[in-house]
Image (cartoon, rainbow, N blue to C red; front, side):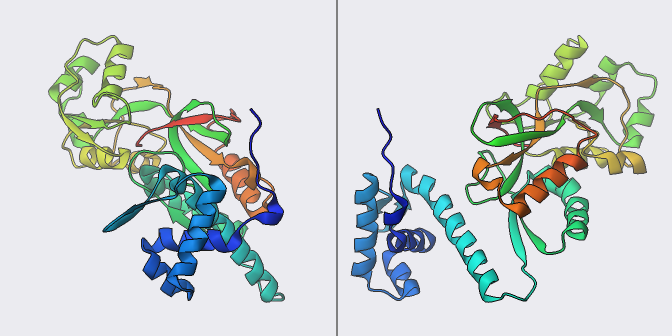
Length: 320
């Protein structure tokens, strides 16, 4: 079956602008006021867009207006496209002034907390005319539709995104120096049994998945289904840092804490659970010079950790 395509010459720009306004304000009345057009004209634009696509874009209820799945799919593309047009027109209007470009970059919460400051500081030194708008959504899901590039914590599977492995995660036991000193001389099994376990929740996995994999890999028969479950690696490390338990986390992510001695790695045992940090870029964005520069710079920065690059790859996204 041949795909239906829309001729670029007939793109309904006013209708798309009306759709964006209604989605942003959650109301036809508020959107009409913001766009300085009548509500009836706004409604006609949205209805025309729905007729063009052949699907409803909004669920219209007496006291609520929500996007349908089709509307949720369309909105990020519309927002990004209008943003790019706005940036380009502003550059042209301000010709002769420094052209400041803004990149919208997504990073997982723990990655952002631990690494965003040095990454963004060093990139700004290299490319002062590119500003970074950092977003760090909590929870599970694919890269946001309105970001230029995204760092994702995930297992690799197939998609149409251009995806580069920054580094493959290897998990080790991390704890406070006090806990390590108090249990010095114990073997791995006795050490785990003697301490509270902190788990990091992963999407679509059992609550204690990583510790279960670690125990199986180490050949240990232990009860690792006890203990606290948290949403991010940073929370797990903070809990361990305060001497409240032991966490299974990536030493690379907490290199500064390990170097300062606030966290220690009492055993060499480690596990590759199949997750890693990936840089994802929509293929149509690779021709953008600012995006291409940030992408190549970030890959080079983490190149010492991984020489592997996967493209294209689908991401089975999890909390990190």
